[in-house]
Amino acid sequence: MKRYNVAVVGATGAVGTEMLRVLQERRFPVARIRLLASAHSAGRRVPFNGTTRRVEELDKRAFDGMDLALFSAGASRSLEFAPEAVKRGAVVVDNSSAFRLTRGVPLIVPEVNPHALRCHKGIIANPNCSTIIMLVALKPLHDAAKIRRLIVATYQSVSGAGARAMAQLYQETQQILRQFKVRSSKFEVNAKLKTGHAKRVRVLPTQIAFNVIPQVDAFLPNRYTKEEMKMVNETRKILEEPALPVSATCARVPVFIAHSEAIWIEMQHPLSPDQARKRLANAPGVRLIDDPARRQYPLPFDAAGRDEVLVGRIRRDETVAHGLALWVSGDNLRKGAATNAVQIAELLIKRDK
Image 1 (cartoon, rainbow, N blue to C red):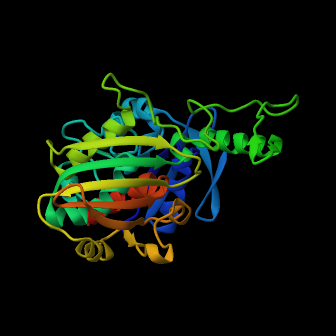
Image 2 (cartoon, rainbow, N blue to C red):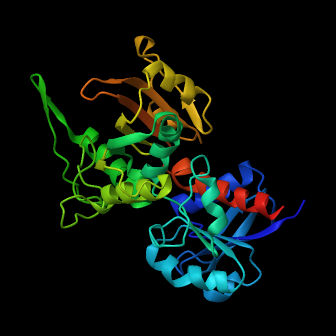
Image 3 (spheres, rainbow, N blue to C red):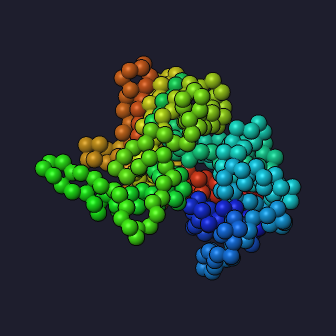
């Protein structure tokens, strides 16, 4: 079997760490691996395939001799280094937003549009985590009855904002539980840090513990956020439906890992909930969990650590003629990022064969 030299950019971050884990789990044919990160992380030792590998500082020469580069280090790093990696002979799978909407760069979810991979010119974009999770669930239904309109509300875990956001949730929860006082039927919260406690971490716009923040990423002039418009524009590109009406509202919730989404779709043709369940039960990348009477439905707790997108709560949307509503949960670090990137790489090596 042919083996490949692989560079992982952002190897010490939450997604980069998961990429290394997924490469091992899926037994990707790695000949040599190069772990790249910022100067701050260079020199660290990271476990991979039963040994530890030294993290190197990211620079342009690091891509010499590499066949494949998996990027998860932010858009600015991708814009600077991905074209250089291609010049030096590597194919780039980029997890940032840098190239997702660039003409000529395929935006790939392997279960949805693998055919688009054939037109790549060295850079392949990994979609936004929320878009991936949603479209794995919707593609079988779109193929069956064609989606006419799509509305989605997301409930996104803090890991989507990085390791420091996870630390913020942990720290805030710890402080609140340590200091609350019960008075009658209510409780009062005092979350002030005492002298000697670690400096408070604040990455998200406000407190996330015991709260829901209706903002993921920055607001745009149309008063949607960047995250919401990513879901709109990426969905249209992946499904090759440039005029598809899509509306998204994205919120951050106090969950460490795995995003959930409430989705309403209007179809062009009739599709009953039972027909939808049959389609989803046999769909790649999907696990159907839909027995509300027994309290069986997708939960982020169950989705964390899995590569399947969990789908349930499938019912008729009674406000439109051919409408369905459903609920999905998926691990944003795995299928929403690392696993999807590795699956793209697997498609590349299949084509190489």
